[in-house]
Length: 218
Image 1 (cartoon, rainbow, N blue to C red):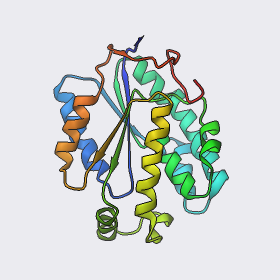
Image 2 (spheres, rainbow, N blue to C red):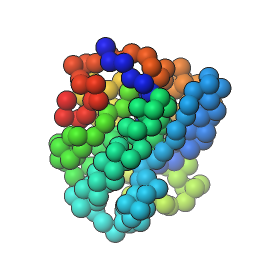
Image 3 (cartoon, rainbow, N blue to C red):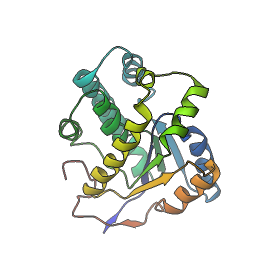
Image 4 (cartoon, rainbow, N blue to C red):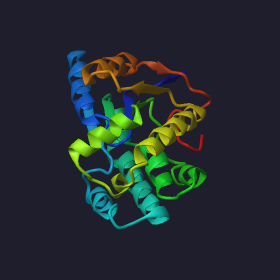
């Protein structure tokens, strides 16, 4: 068993799944439990993160995958590990699961992505939101195109399937994974499910033969 001062939680899912609304409600619920909350996102708000976000429209494949990974290593070093070690419940809007989906949509093999991210910090809980592809497509149509992948009418179905595979990959890495279908569930109810599953800072988590600071390479 590993004793962790804080907790690291990630939230991923297809575009239009309702992550932002769910995160707001989750933040409120966890603060009501008197937790110290630190929210962050990927790409990050650093100069490298902003460059990564801006580059996603014209960089593709391995080049973009490497840039995303570079920003993630910066994220771990500058924000994630320090805040977790300070006792915060750290919540990241997108993390490794998104790379295992979006970069694969861009033609990059999963093993390459795992190798590229082999030294990152793994989450204590990885939450993946999903929904029926038709529901996601409807939400995207209402919201408008925000990413080049959204021009593909088959993208929602492909994302749902790849997130299913990403969930299994993370499980194989020893990560606790919570997959929640949001098709007929409100963001409030989804947030409650997540809040119930978030480990308490200072508590114990199963090691799954991982070191105290688990990585993809463990």
